[in-house]
Length: 386
Image 1: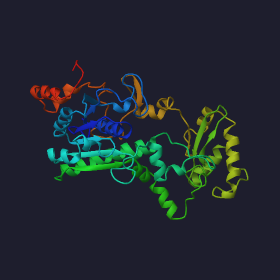
Image 2: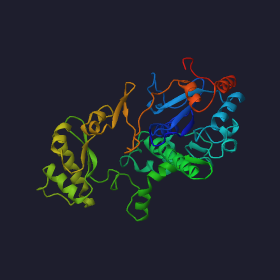
Image 3: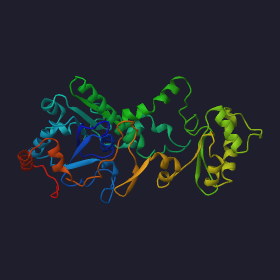
Image 4: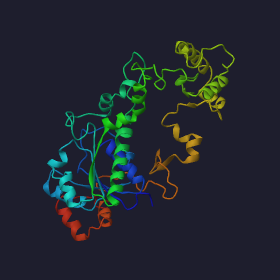
């Protein structure tokens, strides 16, 4: 039984941050029922082929509804009346045009938490425009600090806007609002915008900027690859080691492990000497393989780690010891996090096909056969084997 056991979440099919946030809720024990389109959208987000491969969809059950039909929208409202949390990721105004906006939903269910996940937010001059992770983090200011000096900014996958600044922010918001509602408050709308979540992830940088300790030129700061002791270095076999020896004692240990402690090198914080340090570090790291360097730094506090590929990371001894990655439904994937001592999270179900598990979910949500048949007549669907 997870920490959110008993919480009912109604999720409207979306891409990226909204399903990621709902995955977190499902892992923590929430009962997540997803309303899918009858047919997958032809041009919506990156394509993931193969049954059950989009692992962010784990832990749900599914029903299908064509929300453009009034009967289906009415069925969705019936489901909202049973939910604790609703999550939608459409452009602002879409749910209102479907007759499913928060005013209507909260009138039916006054303690409902209505989570809205967008890139630009529900208001503002850009609210109605299309966009993706890269656009949001560009306008937030965060993208400007990622990349090499004199080159174009580097897309940090879609981790900053979609997931860190989007899905996690959404999950935190709806859980906080639910906590408030269950303490006697009323339901409310949670407006989670990726552009604002990305900016929040960069809060430290704004503090450094205000204190005069951040330069807008990339690779000229502590954490952007500007220092030779906070960067990655190529090894003899073409892999990389990541170095993060910020503190003086860790930097001293780095020099010792690199066998550079007795060399006449510039001081750690001497900016003029950074090119010399970087050149020496690069030359030394290039002399051994990644595995050899792992043995050198084994048990060390020099803050050095191998740069592992996605396929390599799950096999690392630390991840194996903690069970950080799990194999579920034949797919190796990150396990639920964070850890709860009394109510551990778990993956409850594989990624559903459209409509899979729908009838069972409705029965558990308190719908009797007559009401289920009535909803079916109004456009609700689920796979026949249910």
